[in-house]
Length: 314
Image (cartoon, rainbow, N blue to C red; front, side, top):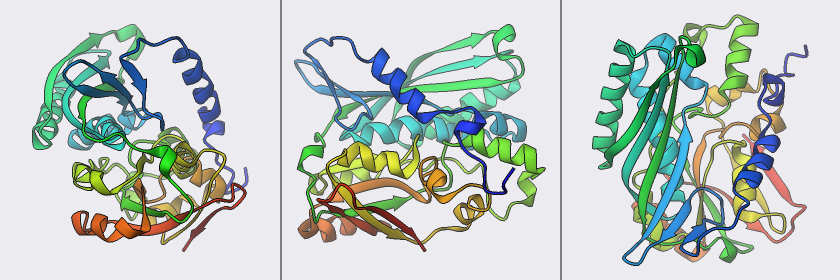
């Protein structure tokens, strides 16, 4: 195999196939009180007294590495963040959480993970209101599956349709690879004989929770949580097919490392590349966002040319 021939689809995960199934399973008629967030991160429930934002996501195959290395707090950060961040990207403030934990056997590891999960949720002010624990040895064997469901109150609907040419693209840094692309990463580690101790960075660091993002709700038009499908899919969620973008930013060490094994286009379509949350902002409001989010970065701009989609990695 070519040294840079690793792909996500070659590791058994096809993002396009997942999109097709999502369209199929969500394609039925909805009650009038259910609205889809236009970027696809969550659903909005317009109840008589309030509007709720709900989302579901899981840790994925990164959980296999967490369990092997007993990284329970990082696993809990991943589970909470993957859901919490989707809710805030849709303009919501998370208030409640439910979990599904599937295991082959209820053991000490599960207790340690549950303790870490409760701790992380407490830190971000979200209540664990219920869940399901399934002990199924024939299905899970020695592995563990962790899925979460997050409920939030809608603070401000995102205005995806109002993102225009000249708007600035801002970004909050990721903490690392977050919890996407690990089928590819695990295959790479296995086939190249790389251990975590060989790496000059922490591969399993938990996903950053963007609890500060609501402070900027009054100043942003739309947000994109960079998850499955990487940076390119996150941009497409907001800009669709009729608008383009120009991005330029500096890569951190872990993303330079992945480019030793993965072609740049594949990496951009799989990983966050160091940008965990994107914000699309009118240029006149950029300074206001920067005043409430100290580590936000200016990474690009929106163009009216759908054929102009350029990402420069420095």
